[in-house]
Amino acid sequence: MSTTPRHVVVAGGFEEIRSRQIRLLEEAARLGDLTVLLWSDASLERRTDKAPKYPDVERRYFLERIRYVGQVLRVEAPADLNTLPPVERLDPRVWAVDAGQDHPAKKAFCESHGLQYHVVRNEDLRGFPVQTPTPSVPRHKKVVVTGCYDWFHTGHVRFFEEVSEYGDLYVIVGNDANIRVLKGQGHPLVPQDERRYVAGSIRFVTQALISSGEGWLDADPEIRQLRPDLYAVNEDGDRGGKREYCEKLGIQYLVLKRTPAPGLPRRTSTDLRGF
Image (cartoon, rainbow, N blue to C red; front, side):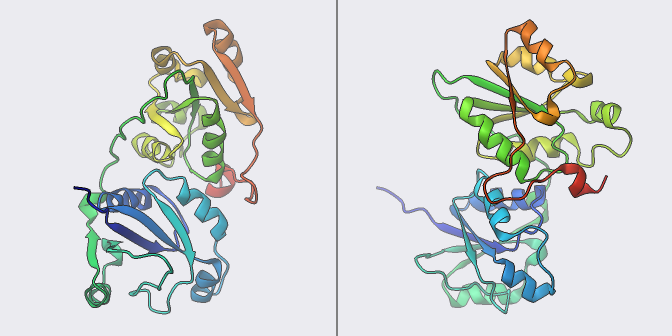
């Protein structure tokens, strides 16, 4: 006997998509098929009197590529954020909220509309689980990328999307100690387990790992274990002896242009974090 999956909604502006927001989406998706109701630019501007830092087309692009999200619907935020706006052809059964957004009025709204109200507790969002690797596609090539991925943005998402077209994608994030050596004190802003988790949350990634080596080739131990067919970098990452390293190991070396997704602005971590 088949069971109809429950439809779960999470609603908000998602002006900054960081690990806590992704953890919320992961926990909400455990309850059923997840739909994100994304507040439009106009909605956010009405509430804050200023344009959002990231336009809704960019926020939607990012959210749609998180593996826990089924669909994203751009909607106008209601005047009362303790309610949900009516959405045509959407019949949710659960409204999931972060504990920081919990409010008795939300619970009352759910009770009056036949919805289950689910508060994702702070303790449920602690830590950064190691995602189960996506099953490899038979006869697919293995592709590896490396990097810091400290201030994760849509440029990284687009890079993963493009690289995944060449095969099963393995992302190796730089370990904290090595990032400090290469980039100096103050780096990284985000610890390695968190960076690994965020990178692994993108649906194009087969598996995300943390490097265990040093220098520009700090991912050497992981690469030798994975034995990839390709090593992909963007133009900024084409340095540090990677090309010669790949020639030595018989790995195809692929350099991609740093091009944002159609309609999106070009993003860099340096610009976004301010240093």
